[in-house]
Image (cartoon, rainbow, N blue to C red; front, side):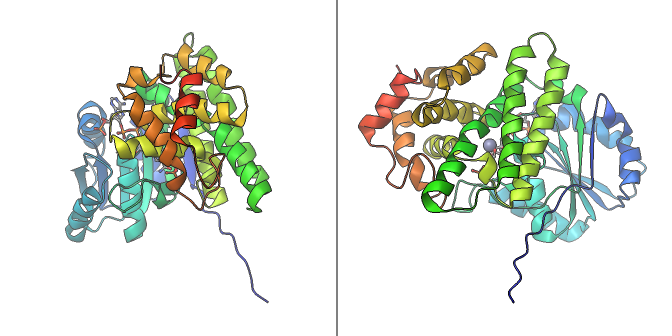
Amino acid sequence: MEIHEHIIDLPKKVYVGNGILGKLKDYLFQLNVVDPVLVISGPNVRKIIVNEIMKGLNEMNSLELIEVTDSSIDEVNKVEEKMKKFSPRFILGIGGGKTIDVAKYVAYRLNVNFISIPTAPSHDGITSPFASIKGLGKPVSVKAKMPYAIIADIDVLSAAPRRLINAGIGDTIGKLVAVRDWKLASKLTGEYYGDYTASLALLSAKHALNCTKIIHRDLKYSVRLLTEALISSGVAMGMAGSTRPASGSEHLFAHAVDLLQPNLAMHGELVGIGTIIMAYIHGIRWKDIRNALNKIGSPTTAKELGIPNEVIIRALTIAHTIRPERYTILGDRGLTWGSAEKVARDTGVID
Ligand SMILES: NC(=O)C1=CN([C@@H]2O[C@H](COP(=O)(O)OP(=O)(O)OC[C@H]3O[C@@H](n4cnc5c(N)ncnc54)[C@H](OP(=O)(O)O)[C@@H]3O)[C@@H](O)[C@H]2O)C=CC1
Ligand SMILES: O=C(CO)COP(=O)(O)O
Ligand SMILES: [Zn+2]
């Protein structure tokens, strides 16, 4: 008899709290982290946060820091080159989504434990066992290492620029559409639909929507809520063994814009706009989503992001080609130029 197994890898420990990075040394001890340890970080985060963290770890005999500037395969190769000489037992990824993606992808390829230390609540890659790496030939995420532990310091995360916090809200609200797409696919194509992981992703989206109502009066509480939502959305991906619960047509749109005009906008901002458009096509409450994003000052129009109307329309027409194996509301044939222009205008994304 053939055995079908589904193996779920989960983090060993998740630390969340205010000012907890000051206890990093204790946590690493609790987690049995032994050196050599490699810290991966980006240039901004290094200056703002990591240099201080490194001082706190100066008792380690073997500790190295490497800076990465984007989540490309070239940066992955650069880190791997360094690892040949250094052979770390643990990797700490400290930063935004791109840094964490490089760290978890390197950790996966070389089978080294990886600890995720987010400095911005801008994405749900904090916990997911997937990484978006540019230069692998596709704009969507690939398999990577599930973090061994997560250390989320709410003081640090809530001090991140507001744009990054808003992007995390956009990335999470996207699950409202992603789960709809998944359900639709299960009806039309017979694809397995995981009720539990879908519910977990939806719960994250609901909490992110709640954040939009309270962030003006209680930033720290909202960031804590958002961080927990990002973590559990990542867990949903880990449990599903795919990004399906967290990425549908709204992400396809975001990936398409990024392909056409790289680095113009943050991932979560594009997902937020994609969510408005795809919610409109699904016939769900797209105006509520747009109002929620407007309320926090997150962009809801192409103009706010400096993206030409033609790029939005073109992205909508090619989005269905990005991951053809994952059925969404865009169907197999996608949108025509005319229908793409109409939905973008009807939702106010272009004028
Ligand atoms: N693997 C997955 O499942 C997922 C992956 N992603 C991916 O994550 C990426 C998006 O991540 P995102 O975080 O939005 O973008 P970036 O990682 O590009 O971070 C944006 C900027 O914010 C800076 N930054 C981070 N923390 C702070 C802070 N506390 N204070 C000041 N600046 C800070 C970074 O600095 P520095 O230059 O130092 O890095 C960087 O310049 C995309 O590539 C996306 O595809 C998104 C969702 C899920
Ligand atoms: O960004 C993601 C989830 O928020 C990952 O999605 P993709 O698998 O589409 O890259
Ligand atoms: Zn995302």
